[in-house]
Length: 492
Ligand code: GLU
Image (cartoon, rainbow, N blue to C red; front, side, top):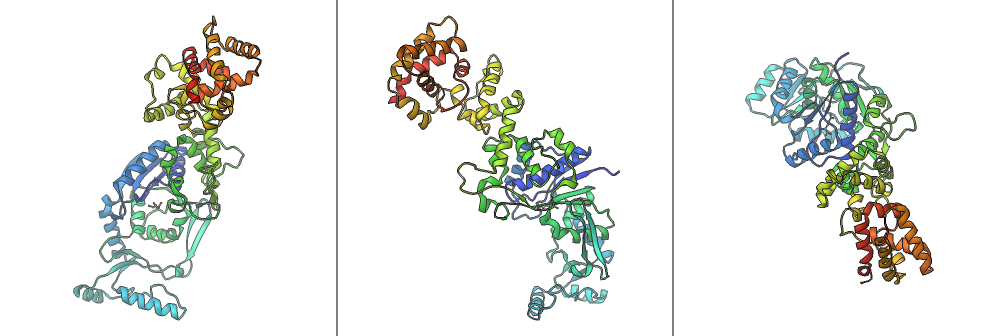
């Protein structure tokens, strides 16, 4: 069997779109599954639209997602000699010809054909020019493009698509397409094939939006005497209204960077993207890297459009709810050491990282992450909703403040009193603090819930969270006492 060599060839004209990331992921999976190679090739021939910022964004995004490549990044512009040589080869071998028709002539013919409801494709005027005609036109300096000479034979050009089966198109349905512009620059369609031949690409896994090119590209492979790769065209990703998801209509949610900033776990995003257009044939939704590599097959890529379930203006879900749910599942079950690394990166960015979390407070740090992660949705929640465990500048949310604090002004006296009771304890444990809290509630003839909810709000700023006495242990005696004693600040 030939070596599996796949490529991810983004055009660096913007941010890394989640559709692009899905393409990269599926290629990566196929390479890893087969012990093959993933080649990163930046298709930067469109000099006006390509930017360095975009190249960096693509590389950063792939690195963040954990999609490592084996060769590259190569840059398409560095291979223009190959592209020019291929164009010459096609001319020399009679698979292409120079076309001297001017734009005006072509436009006029097209308009006339349209008016007469006739075929609007190029009529082949220059297809059979004699060498003398050509020499004469060149002498006159008439600009020309190079067109591919589509065989005028009955029958169809066909290729095998691993997802969609045999795809064929009649030769007489394909126009003699341009492969080199009049400024001498080879067109993308040709460059892409030449690069894939040079990079010995075995499988091309890309979106169905490229299918309009594929039959013409197959003709180019054949004319260049190259092996035609195996194709697998993936379904498009549309929103609920069946529109392509784009930054213009959907905003930031289409960019990989958005998920990074929002605190998504890179592999959770990959897991979600894999399921967007591929299905395992079972109900399994969560896949480790190894499981996904094992389960992935090209044949199980979907045939029909996949849906990114996002509705603008949905206050509850700022992206596809399934993505949030997968992220939560990872957050709750992933190895603590791995989680700690992701939280560390965010804490560093938020300026609340403490070196001791990696030294003497390591156990405390891991236990605390484990304690609070149950209700969290993203990594950012540790520094926001969970801030009280790691910093003193945490916010007290409006709802618990109103419900658990302002409604009970006597807590101003009661919570400092409770702090005194805690101070007098021989041992500061879950059991002793709970007993002390209940005893004080009894004495004051109030429901223990009033003290407990008040305490939760003062200590964490949140309405809900882990068990109250677990919280006390996580915060430690000193911080608990200090915060309870300072309850006054909440009534200001
Ligand atoms: N540069 C193309 C794109 O970004 C990729 C084309 C291909 O995969 O062949 O859409």
